[in-house]
Structure formats: C-alpha cells, structure tokens
Amino acid sequence: MGLAVTSAAGIFSQATCSYFYGSIEGTMTFSMHALLLCHELMGTARRIWKGVTVDDDTLAMDVTREVGPGGNFLGIEHTAVHCRKEISPTKYFVSKSFDNWVREGRKDLKDIIGDDLQRILKTHVPEPLSPSLIEKFNEILTKYGVPGIAPR
Image (cartoon, rainbow, N blue to C red; front, top):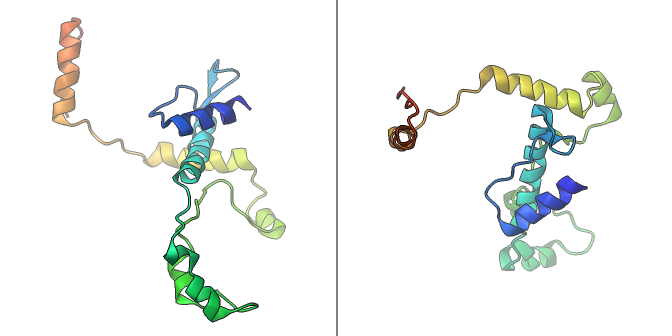
C-alpha cells in the first residue's frame, strides 16, 4: 500500500526521483528484483498520467457510422493506425494461457524478473560520462580534497 500511495504522489507531483524504488522491508533492504518491478509499475503509472487523447480523429465518429452497429472495426485502416497508441506494454505482466505458462516452465513473477535481471547484468554497458560532466565532478571533488575522476 505504501508503495502505491507514494508512487501515485510522485506521479501527480511530477517528481524527478524517488529514494525507495527497489527497497523492501520498510526501506531497510534493497532488492534488484523489486527495482525492476517498480520500474515496470512506474512505466504503467506514467502512461496513465499521460492520459488518453480525445479528439475528432480518436473518437472516429465517421468510422463508427460507416461500420455501423454489429460491424467489425478490426478490418478498418483507422483501427490499424490507432490500435497500439494508447496501451502500455509490460514485460512482466503478460497474458498467456495456462498451457503456454506450463510449456514455458511455470515461471512465477520472481523467476521472470530474475531472468531479466541476469540478462541485464550480463549485457548492460553504461554510457560513459560526458567530458563536461567529469570536469564538473572533478571541480567539486578537488574543492573537498578528494582525488578526481579520470576521463575514459
């Protein structure tokens, strides 16, 4: 409950960061699994915050009149153009049949996130800091008598 309330407050206030994503046990412990889960949930929350566009094009009253009651919107070009604009794709919360879930190894959410975490840890290469940012860091570090960061 605390995560949901605090996340909603962060979204509505348009906060740029939050200290608790990935923390568990009342922020006494950190979990990479929890961090990836929070990242997914915040992506969905950001999408909700963005809202849905309602205008003449998205309402498509002309298409509605053309197709008529009981008609099929799936074969209409307008549907093809707009059908994926308002969704928030997720990596961890996906719909699949029970048979597919069994066939794919009966993985629960912790296992799915764990597999993704291992992939990220093996393949991620962080972007190098820009020379101007390294220079600013070094100015601050020098001010406090700390050795600077060597540029890569």
